[in-house]
Length: 225
Image 1 (cartoon, rainbow, N blue to C red):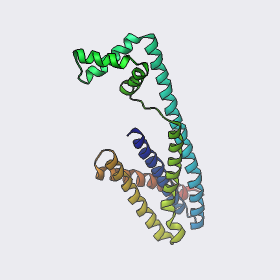
Image 2 (cartoon, helix red, strand yellow; image 1 turned 90 degrees about the vertical axis):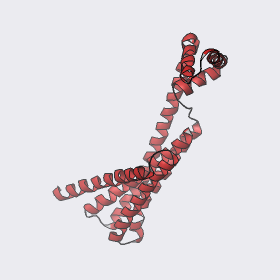
Image 3 (spheres, rainbow, N blue to C red; image 1 turned 90 degrees about the horizontal axis):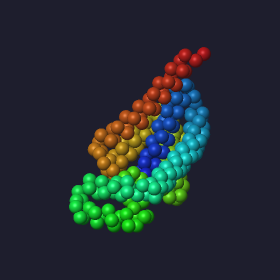
Image 4 (cartoon, rainbow, N blue to C red; image 1 turned 120 degrees about the vertical axis):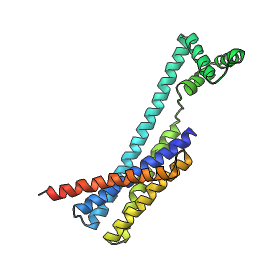
């Protein structure tokens, strides 16, 4: 379930970032009076660079997650060697909090601490709530974020390739709104939360960020010589 959650996180991270970023660029170019060819060229350049950048961010963040897990595992391993009584008491407290008492609790503690690997993994799972990160997860995260970011960029940009500017702008905003709302709904269905609230929240955040970009571009265009 942890990895499935990360998969969804990567899709939302890349897709939302790409969609909001390109929508802001589109509105900014229009506010600045740029032509449609300039808009499309700028959008495609942003799609490529931003997708690569986001994929790199996904890679480095997942590597950091893996390194943090390994560092904490090494620390816990050292504590089992140097202060086993303390670590054993921590196991006892963890399972006492789960409702185990008396002889049953001691049996659980004895069983877990009888095997060092099991003891260490229990500390990682139950005390630190950390999960290992496989090398395959690192590559997967980077690829998923890259693709999701690219797709997010192309959704609002595509209408400008096939439609006139005004209908293309309307279509881009409508498509973006639908996708943002859909992502919010899917996240609530897959994870937890009210689908209407999550959908509207994603919609407002995404279009709000793009609107800010439009406002800033309009202001700069007005005051620039």
